[in-house]
Amino acid sequence: MDLITQYDIPFLHPLAVHFPLVLLLLGATSAGLYLLVGRAVWRQAGLVLFLLGTLGAWAAAETGHDLKNAVEGDPMVELVVERHESGAEWTLWMSALATFLFALVSAAQLRLPRRVPTADAADAAAPAPTPRRTREPLWGRLLVLLPALAAAALVAWTAHLGGLMVWGVPR
Image 1 (cartoon, helix red, strand yellow):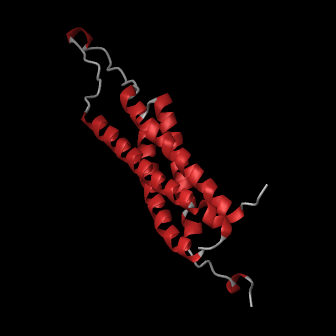
Image 2 (cartoon, rainbow, N blue to C red; image 1 turned 45 degrees about the vertical axis):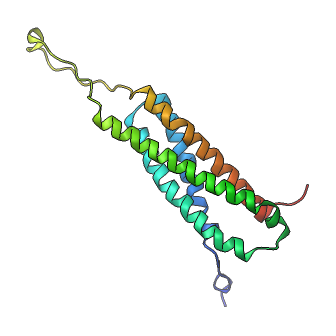
Image 3 (cartoon, one colour; image 1 turned 180 degrees about the horizontal axis):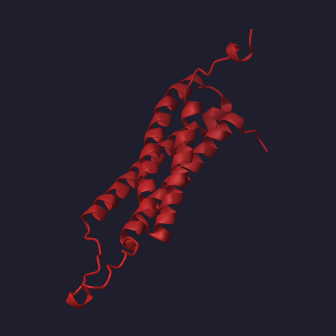
């Protein structure tokens, strides 16, 4: 019999945890680029990445409950699991806050009037200037940055604790 077919992964948690880790770290990177560059594409990327990352964090938390019950009694798990679970809850809430703020800033950007150069009668014969890309307002870029960075730090810390439970060895 083939070696691969002899084994099974009975829990989805080890598979689910990688999605929020990657998506939230990329989302925080988008928030940083949005602050620096100020372009809508980075705000939109942050919104999508945080939305998917928050859904992934929820899935990871839900699948973690089953795994926690199955590994009770393992000494390493007993030392770390409560902190890991708490980190997961904080990650979920912070990523949800970042998602909400990205959505709020996106909605505000839709309502803000665009700066379009006006032409007077003397300029009517001149060719129309090409619209210049302008940075989005600083308030929105700053608003999303802190929760995005906090969510990234929390997911990294939670992943580290999960890694300790699986791979940790005493020094």
